[in-house]
Image (tube, rainbow, N blue to C red; front, side, top):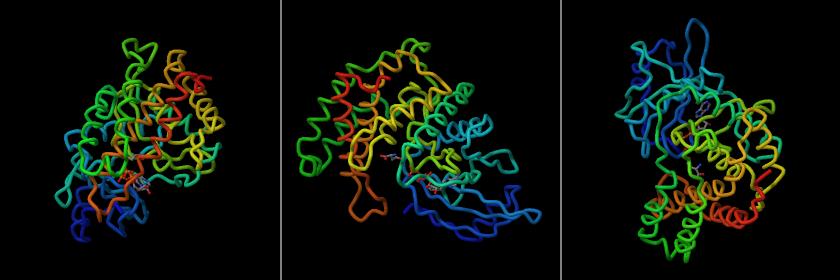
Length: 330
Ligand SMILES: Nc1ncnc2c1ncn2[C@@H]1O[C@H](COP(=O)(O)OP(=O)(O)OP(=O)(O)O)[C@@H](O)[C@H]1O
Ligand SMILES: N[C@@H](CCO)C(=O)O
């Protein structure tokens, strides 16, 4: 459930007078999502009803970084990517404050996210990711990846030092230490941008962040992990999130479809192909680590549903065994 901050009818109606989007007709909290409080708003202006999403930023989002995220979303939305467009108030600012939290209204996107990923989703998803990368090339401001390779050792140390980690997951932090060492030694040097292009990446493009309609990607949401990093690392995150079936088997048909969709827009360089196994293992480690840390540090009875780190530990094991034979390379 993700409504941490309650908003009253009158408070919201008065907040909306700062915008030119009409008056409030209805609103309700959205249960999905774990990071922020989200509400679906319906307004009416000149007899026309329109839907919007109101987000109150909680927990992990650093308010100082919100202009970067909202600026990226605006840039992408106005450069052909179906992502939420931040709506500016009458004073031109999209970032505002409501109920004591930083807040923004964005456009509502149609479609639904796939509860059961099929190979048919993977081509359009890969294509949409490549279009996002292309559109991002003209967004100049940068943001370092706070959950990139340099963050993994400290995150692992913090998870290992947390109460209950060893009891709940015996031997896991020792296994992750070895994995980290191996991944860092195989991590590609990002010194030549022509060989390993860098740019704006989504960094969390999981199935619950991609809406589909009529077999196409109709919306990409949740840009609050976006950052400036290796484009191929974003591909690797998607290979993690989209290409394992329910039994934990890495589905090469989904991988091929995702890569073919991506490369129909932006062909990967041969250095990017070569780097994919290490990038995939790194992606698996990143989500295993954040999930592990959250698992042992989320108090019992919290509203948030914890995500199982072992799902990503299993993916990590698959990618680590692949690193020697390089089957991701196509
Ligand atoms: N622009 C949008 N258009 C339509 N629905 C949206 C939009 N943004 C969010 N939603 C709905 O709200 C839900 C939660 O949004 P989101 O995933 O961004 O939550 P969060 O808590 O901010 O992030 P996280 O997924 O990391 O927990 C989505 O699953 C979707 O149903
Ligand atoms: N996509 C992340 C959650 C953060 O949005 C995960 O599945 O661990």
